[in-house]
Image (cartoon, rainbow, N blue to C red; front, top):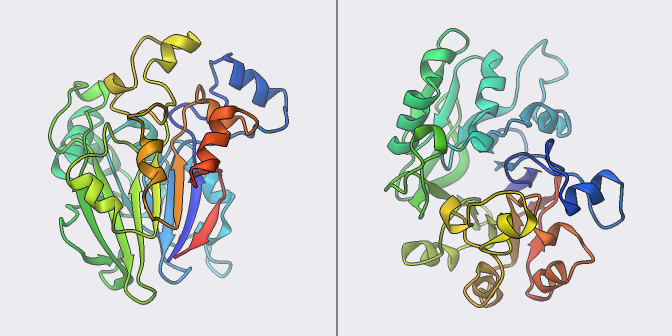
Amino acid sequence: MFVRLLGTAAGGGFPQWNCNCALCREVRSGRSGTSPRSQSSATVSADGKSWFLLNASPDIRHQIEAFPKLLSPRDHVRGTSIEAVLLTNADLDHVLGIFILREGGVLPLHAPPGVRKALDEGLRISEVLKAYGGVSWTEPPSTLKALLKSNGSESGLLYEAFEVPGKLPRYAGSKFEKGSAVGYRLVDPRTKGRLVFLPDTAGLIGPVSEKLKDCDALLLDGTFWDEDEMKKTGTGTLTASQMAHMPLGGPQGSLEILRNLPIKRKIYLHINNTNPILNESSPQHRQVKEAGVEVGTDGMEFEI
């Protein structure tokens, strides 16, 4: 399985357009140890030819241009190797790219019922895109099944979705509700490679923790270091928990859990512009590396 991180920042990107926090100032100044990041998304493929997007960020056009394998083939006037989009939730930073992909014909979208409902009722996504190429919906399976290409043939990958603690986005009510967020587990039967994609979660408990024990690579929510990070940096009033994100730091943070998991590749993505791990010289960044975990960067690629 081929994996590429298209974007690794949380909503707003890094630097965020309206933010003058310390980290945004540093990256704008070109300070060594900090690098710009686009909003979170990834793509996977079994053969390097047919690709599936894991969420579609508002930065998707630039992310596609930076990864030519997603562009139209050289001998075609138009086209793409993108077969479908697998959505983890209805957050704007994960779905606005769908509108940008409207010129490509019918776009297959995989999403649980709660996410589809939020998108259709809150953003009228099916109705709006009906005037363009249109969309087709697939509810992802709860047990491993073949991930199909847009023409219905097998892609060479298996996939399943599993519910995670999360909430609806603000435009859909901002409530913690069952089925408002999922993670994905993808398996390559040929190589036996197993990937878990979990960019948003309020916790790693119960069935979610079991999924983490059964993978070779993990892409995990790295939004905040501290529970009160927004307040401490003067960038907001909500806590990490109120925004349905599990902090990295502290004895109850995700980093302590990852430290003891025997996963070959453990990578944080969806990193907020206030998170000190974005500065490679920070003690928090060093703690992540010492725990055997990586801080994801745009364009990072690997195979499993």
